[in-house]
Structure formats: structure tokens, C-alpha cells
Amino acid sequence: GAGVSQTPSNKVTEKGKYVELRCDPISGHTALYWYRQSLGQGPEFLIYFQGTGAADDSGLPNDRFFAVRPEGSVSTLKIQRTERGDSAVYLCASSLRGRELDTQYFGPGTRLTVL
Amino acid sequence: SQELEQSPQSLIVQEGKNLTINCTSSKTLYGLYWYKQKYGEGLIFLMMLQKGGEEKSHEKITAKLDEKKQQSSLHITASQPSHAGIYLCGADGSGAGSYQLTFGKGTKLSVIP
Image (cartoon, rainbow over all chains, first blue to last red; front, side, top):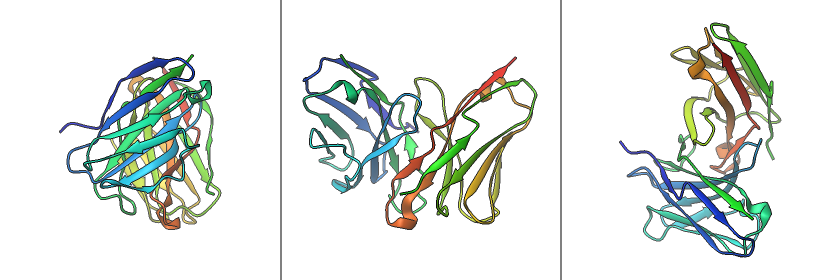
């Protein structure tokens, strides 16, 4: 079946602009995760949804970052007043139940470049 | 917080050679995941290990978790160009009440035909 999809695949924006990144999880997966990967680093956790609610947002770096999942499926990561340091690959993952030892399946990522 | 250290950082091998990548945790592992990433792509799930001494294989890739559950190794037998990419180990945070994964920095593997 279809895997996790993310759009756009690439996004170039100017400093100070607002961006939205979209994630479409595997059908039937209740848990959804956002990670951010900088060059030469492993992915770093941002936020985790169980259904429609954010169960853990401890990884969001500051209040410029916000994510929603209004119907428990598609999620949008929103970044306000972008800064050059926000440039990274933003990865989305989903898992079936969001419980312990539940395998997370990743999408191809969105490469964000802030000029 | 848990930290994962991977070694080596990069590896260049001749096609057909065997190789091993290591992942060492600062804390006892509750669950350890191995993923592969190609440039411009997402992470592809390889294997998950949970029990001390556990070993799993898929095609020519074998992953082991040591008895103390603080180190894992990934072994590739008779490497092929298709094995090239970045290998990432990730620790499951469930043991600490969190479902996020904490990753190492990755090992970049190049296979020369």
C-alpha cells in the first residue's frame, strides 16, 4: 500500500516568511510524528500526535513552530517568521498504534531552505 | 537524556566485502531500530531489536543487540552497491514514557564496484 507522503518535497522561502509543510500518513495509522534533520545529523524529534491531539510537543524548538492534525489523519507543520537556522529536512513518520515498540515509517521529507 | 554514538562515521568498502557498523547507547536500550537513508529520501526501516542477545537477519544484513542492551551492531555480508547509503540507529523512548525515537548521527556507507 501507499507509504507516508509529504508535500512539498522542496520549499525555498525568505527569512521572516510563513511556511506550511504537509504530511499524509499511512492509512489507518493513529500515531504521527514530526522530526527535523540537519545536515550530517540524525533526525531530531519535534512532536507526536495520537489521533487528533498532540501527545508530546516537547521537541518543538520555540513558539514559532506549531503543528495540527484536525481530523486524525493529515498533519500540517507550520513555521512562522522563518529564520535561516530553520533550514533542514523535515521528516514525518506514522505508526499503527503509537504505543511502545511500534515501528515508525518515514516519509521522504520536505527540504526547507530559508534564504 | 539518551545519546547514541555510531561508529564509524563513514565507511568505504569494495564490493563483495563484509562490514560492521556499531551503535552504542549511553543508557540501557528499551528498543533499538535500524534504518537506512539514501540522499534526498526518507528513512527505510530495516530491523528492530528488543531483547538482550537478540539477532535478526534480512537478506544480507544482520543486526544484533548485546546482552547488556547498550550496544548494537549491523553487519553486511558481501556488500553490493545497493547497500550504499546512511545507516541510522534509533532508540525507542518507551522505556522512559516517550514514544519518540532518539537517533545517532548515522554512518555513511559507500560501496565501490
